[in-house]
Length: 618
Image (cartoon, rainbow, N blue to C red; front, side):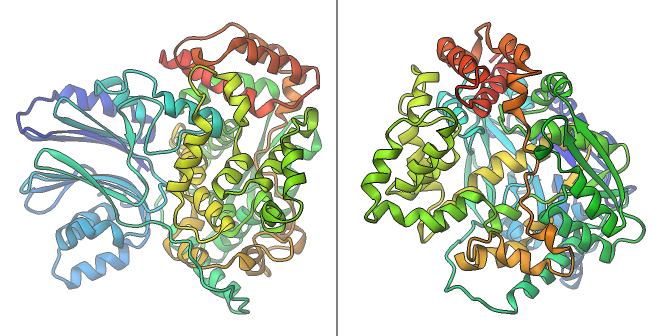
């Protein structure tokens, strides 16, 4: 895995300073500690930080074609590079290295701006065609790898992370209020906007073309969640298993040590079991548990799976003290505020894994593709009540202002009683409810709820039904800007590459064609995936309810972390955090610590925002 950055002068005046690009590159050193490279001509400058995985001796970047007219910096892994290389050789292309990087250059020479659509992998790249005076920026289909850009004073800047652009592009000179409010609502900032004005994320499945003084962005792929009738086919689990097996096999390509995160649940367990079919030698696996209530610690399940699969297993734990000590480090590794509590354990398990391997396999994507969330099951069972005979009673219950531990039931009631799918989805996933957001940030976020409903509708328009649209929305927003961002930033902070076999092109294409009954059948979530995993894992693991990195925050914030959270949030704030009403936040703290109401996740979102604002000064 790597870090990339660069500048293009639209005017061709050579107005950027080499030191700017090198300074941006230095801020990405954690993404690529093994080597660095730089190229500059009169129009463009490209820089690369390398974490060597494939063709360790020969894959240096920026890489050029034979004539020196095409230069590439690239972050990622191309899993079908061997097949593409053979195809390109048949078409007359000659290769100087065995790296996947060179394949992208020849793929561009052969197919131009259509090249990205032929790639199966995780990637973000910048390609400078000096003959055409054209810069291409591209990102993989589902946004596994990040890419940010900004335009300022006739210059185009890009980087793998937001911070180099904020520091050196002249853009990002203030808080994007709409993005801030969406963060408070969703716990992440959905693209293409970022928390800083003037800096943007290149959307997943997109290619940006900069030439003739302007930047144009087009989608080369987007998820089409418009399935036919439910198959119910006995052959479907076998087809899915074959695709996932092939994906794992492709992603085992590495010249450095490789292992896997193992939670003891279905998604990671199936990946590790399939690794055992193809990987020579013992597989190293890594798990993490929590000090506190036993219900939050899954290490016993992970040990059982590790014993069954014969892995070399390592584990660690996260205590309340660890949490408080790691928060500044974790927030420092974020580009933007990201209030997913799993960031902290993801960082700690990544640090453990990096002591033993350079690459890990993970299970991200399994829930979104195969219908693993509890809210999907509840929507399938109860979503019709919104237009049925109980709609009025349900709506009155939802509006009654339930308090105390019933807050989650109020969210569910509001979701189920919502007539529109986007409003229902937002009630399911929001950190703050509509009126709560108006309380915590009244001056900045008064219209955010309806604004975000409109954004969700526009983002997930590919769905052809209420539940299909919710799943499409999670694929386009939650998966990209929360889960994948979390794994990328926390693993890259310790120079660890994380691979996601469930997001292989072939696996995704099969999943998108599934009917709802293939995903959720008789109340059983991830039905097809669970059927496919028979024979790989024991039934008690396949059908076990998995918590993942579900921290006992509610308990910790009332007990060992009570003083920590009061001290952190109690003193007001500056920058982005100044939008928060201190009195409302204080009431949240008091209600939570007294046990009157569970505000754990909303408090965590404020904690992250406060820490981020203090560190960034924005």
